[in-house]
Length: 319
Image 1 (cartoon, one colour):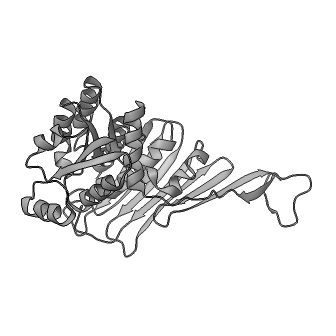
Image 2: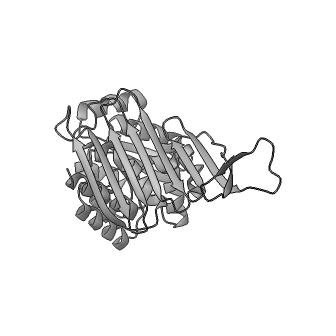
Image 3: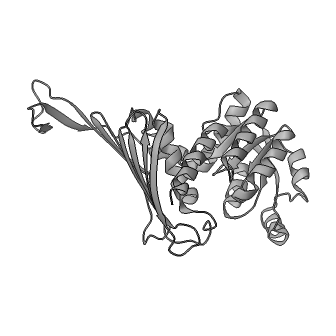
């Protein structure tokens, strides 16, 4: 089993601590947090080993799980990688694209693995249909959340929209051609609601909306492609796959048939997959262990984390 340690014991860090302790692929060694009083309280309550410094923690583990504020990602990840440790970094990967590039180069130099915590890639509703998404040409996403002061130190694009950016880049196999966007600050000093239009070289268009001042929570994406419509509800963990095929010679009496202006008939049918229950954070951590043990590329690589950050920052530049 891989020895793991957590840097950062805030809201999400505590979840990572609990799941690493539960995992069958890691041995949780301990954690470090700059908030000394809070860290001692957590150590006393849950029995986790509290390290006195970042260096001590890094030296004691094989894998460093970085759940610190984004501004600290680069320095602590750099320190871990230079000591030959594998790194799991919460999203976004770093503050800047240049920092992300440096981490990628360092990881290659020191021959270590890195994964970025884009947890929606492990959402069961998404994993159930991702293999059915084939050359989508129009995508629409809505990620709306009720206001929570936690996370408002960064624009809503880096807080929420980046999840959908990563999911879209994972299924659109084309370079970004053009981006237009707008954002509005309502409560925070940075934009709380944003809309972006991403145009790809292959003609695909993605329209993304994110808000952290909504009256209800919503995390939905819709993918439109030739002869298919795929809907993913990340919040409710549900999905729907609607497909069209040529009408058979003797269609069923209850078949749903559409005819276009040219007289071409298509039959509509549902191809909804089963959705297994899972813990997405545990899955992303466990698959990272698999990548390390099997010497394979992590599901969300540092390179993919960099690409999501690049697009997110280009969107922010439009404001």
